[in-house]
Length: 174
Image (cartoon, rainbow, N blue to C red; front, side, top):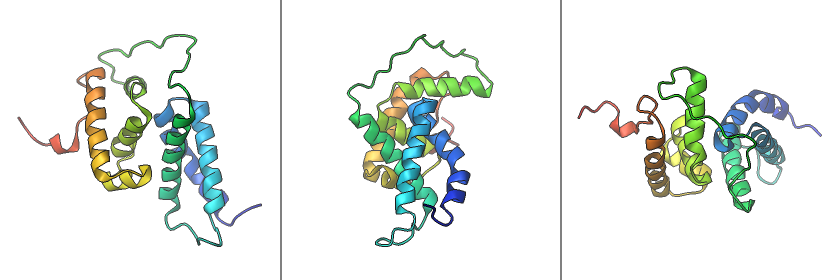
């Protein structure tokens, strides 16, 4: 069964969805599973006769991805994952993109799924508070509150050169 335009959409958006999913869950295989579940949800809704076409398929897909991630985390009995080997800590003066990704992934790993989702959507996907709230099914105030608390937990884990800055603090000189 094929829906016109869906295959092209899925091919074009899959890399961005996988990147977002990996940032949310830090597991390539789980990220691919999340994207597959997300695309299945988008497929069902693509041209649903009782609802009409999706107005913004990209936003719909990212919203579905975020909600799929959050609901999958709620279903798990534990947030711990066994590791065969402990990961090495990133070097304090890391400058290349790989070290930056590892440092960021390590910092995000210590957060609750909803806090991680807020930071990924707000600061890595560059969404507004309102867009993040809509994707997560939260109020804008809850998104701001989660952002503030999650950033407070992440900042000490990152070296000063990698520290996440809040948009309100950019450009101010104290």
